[in-house]
Length: 181
Image (cartoon, rainbow, N blue to C red):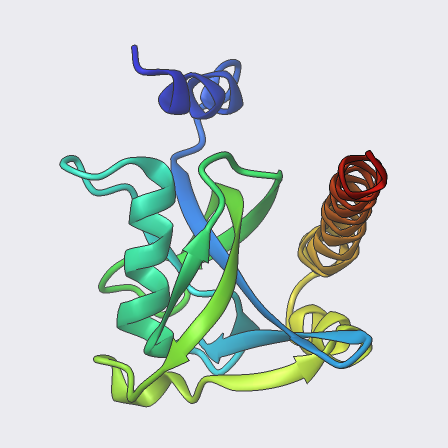
């Protein structure tokens, strides 16, 4: 089993839930971060998400969903940073739902175009607004889990930023040492 599928296999173990993927699309706006959400067919806000494509890796599948539902492309992380459980309407039944486990991948948006799925209404929200929108219209355990994805993404981005800053400081230190010689 390829390395990038191993994490999703562990995610699915011990559960009968189908696994899907989500692209947690973000952009940096000054010192804050914004998240791109799309409407579901029932009108709730969500991250672009969907099934795994058999010929794509999980991260590529998530990126494809972002392109189809939100019209965005960018740099997606190869590994999922978190997961959550949500409900999804059963095809052909407006009142029947089932649980799905969703692996969340960070996608830094570089390009925005019109989405292939025109009814999705992709909209940018601050982290606070995104938490509120994601919680709307969902029963409590699901609303809490999906809203926590925003916090997990912000935490992940903070760690990533610290690592980049530490790397730059090390590089600058080496350059100073080299120029002092």
